Length: 357
Image (cartoon, rainbow, N blue to C red; front, side):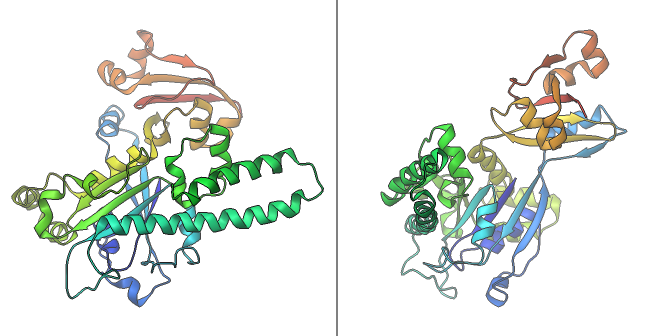
């Protein structure tokens, strides 16, 4: 799972990156070295994995991970030509950091602090970048199809023109319920407005009462969009305290949890992810996959050879394995079930894949 933190300048992207990853990068770094980016891989806290690992103390515990990339701010109109465009296309999800705080010493690029306006404006930037990509591909397709009969080329043209129509109407592609076949075509282009997105609004101390209601800042809703509100200034100050004191100060400010906890929950929601587990010879490991992933494709997340040679999946739900305490007892009670290639992996499944080398 990989997320890119992006947005207009001076919104708090690096602050949020530090809060999510525990890094200590200098705020304002990108103003000095605009072409550089921050990248950090973080483990995803997982109580189920902790409990599973307790059954196998001789094995290494390996949680699932999330990669965060912190990009320099985009000026309006820049995103379609930015050198960071490729980075945005490669990630699984986008985290748009939005300014919701006032600070006279930190000028904003727009006349007023208005998160709803800035979110809409950035959506327009993503849509424009996608329209330019479609226009470029359609121009090339027109040349390729001239005087030729290519069913695949004609179908690609139809799908792109359908997407183009929605974009020209101002609708991000993530909000359109495309048939599976069409969505596969579109995913190959890594369109930005198709990607799931978290709108992260950085508020000031006067708006702490709005932190639990980020949806009020969103100009539009959708299953692939989530809202997160945080106060970067206060949360950073709390993280500088001794670990034993942080909970107390969170409560004093009326905050329920840190941004990383909210962000991870939202990321699973907008990406429609679940977690399954494997117990190997040396490690107990968590894996993230989209919901409704067939067993062979889930095996391929571990290794492509496992997907190609898939035979069957031996599956037991996590809660049942924890109740009985071991695989041997689970087998005695007939609690481990065999599934073929049509089985859809469920959240919390503990799976052993049988495959031919």
